[in-house]
Length: 601
Image (cartoon, rainbow, N blue to C red; front, side, top):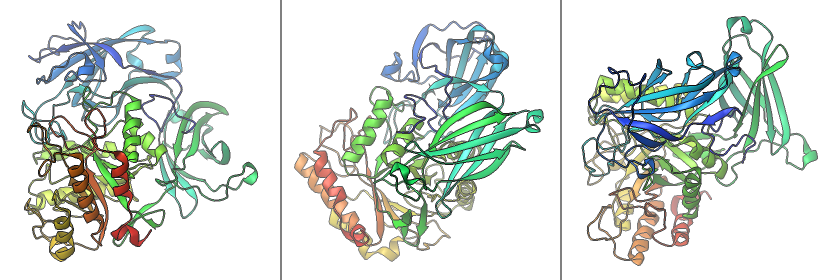
């Protein structure tokens, strides 16, 4: 655990002391005629329901549990504000996630709007506030539009395939904080292992007059309470760059000299504290943390800190029975990570969702590798391109500092780019997202597109739900050249590469396989034939997992999946997080060193 950790604090790598959690009971109303704005509900709200934020009205924990479609909904609550503080501080309202178009009014005055369901957004509402009680009204607009990034949310009235009940409105924490008018607005932290340094990019908010005065940003690094170094940077513009040394040299505390690196086995984290200093006075303080680790591609290998990394991942959709996409608590997030570790996995692929940032914090702390994905759209249009690109950039920047994220995965199985195999326009879109991601993050691999029909991609990933282990293994051993081309490689009639692209020696990972389900009278589904007993389950799991590990050129895998999700019942746990088979047996199979993995251990 790091020094800045505060339970339930939503923005875990940028922590201030003066904040308030605005979750809890809000007034609520459906607006099925979409008349609320015309009738100015933001001035005289008459909601006839209450809802427990951040749970959506579709869920049990919301207190409403109505799974039918309502495209326009309204929220209202009162907030208490200290008027004297507004003389020196701004009051900033944060939404960790609200799907899809969110509009905000404060005391009847429009504060702003945001489009997109998965990224954090904020409003400085200082000028709309008064001392004491203030009214906060929120309208959220959603739809079944297939152009809209929606991930696993259905776009018809009933569940189908692997698409589930829609998520409408506020589904992550709403909170506020007092922020000094001169403040550190953001910081980007990039580890530089070769030079034993952390690269820092500051965004400072201050008036032009303050910029011209004695304005400084100080960054103090420590490790397990031991001071490491400090750097003070003069602020001459709103964006500044510097670096800070992270080499431990003080031996009097019993710590080894050198740089402490982050890995699944030893997830070492440094603390860092920022201060903004104006005319010798500290005007803003922010607590954070970082890790020193390097992830890069070297021919057919993914390297972590210069060593080959065999990734034992599991697909994690992040759904809960009574709260759907919203984690019911911070403890529920920790439970998932601990149980994934107990199953013998060293990482996860967070599928079609940008998870609560507290989850990423605990992955940082506990050493859980993460592939960061995003919700897909399902129809390719100019509008879809614009919405997807904007939201993906927000997500990459928002979660950039988390060391647990080792791979960006913006596209999955050609969803939203259904003609990417042959259509140049869609291929160009994937290349644009690849290079935009690289323009922000020079270090992490980017996968385009996970599963098949890759264009430009740092890792080639293949999805194959073959249920016979020997067939699975032999397919990839006997037909490697054919598979890593534009030829069809399995029964889905998909090819590994899109037309016009060639395999160039990248690492190869089987990033979806498994999905075994128990027979339960045809209720729900899994991949392949259902099994009747635990013995059958373990036998098949062992054979397919071992088969993947024996493919000589494959450097990792991702099993489907952590838990059951609504009608999809192929998890290693049920939706209430009970193991279906002995976790120790699964762990032994996953950690057994054979094939490619054994060759460099």
